Length: 85
Image (cartoon, rainbow, N blue to C red):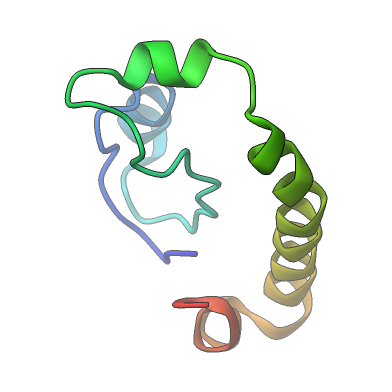
């Protein structure tokens, strides 16, 4: 979770930032970096591996907990609790 930042090359975020600027909180649910250089498109469009499918429910639950914490405790407390885990 970040309190603000750049679009990092993501066109959807670029459009949002064109409208409201960079100063908004965001929760990144990333794809990792286990792909060859330049292979992001194929990696993102491919099916989840068996290992990734097994990890998905736990990661979604963590994201839900982070969103709940953000709403109830604020961005700073949420970042302190969850970032780097």
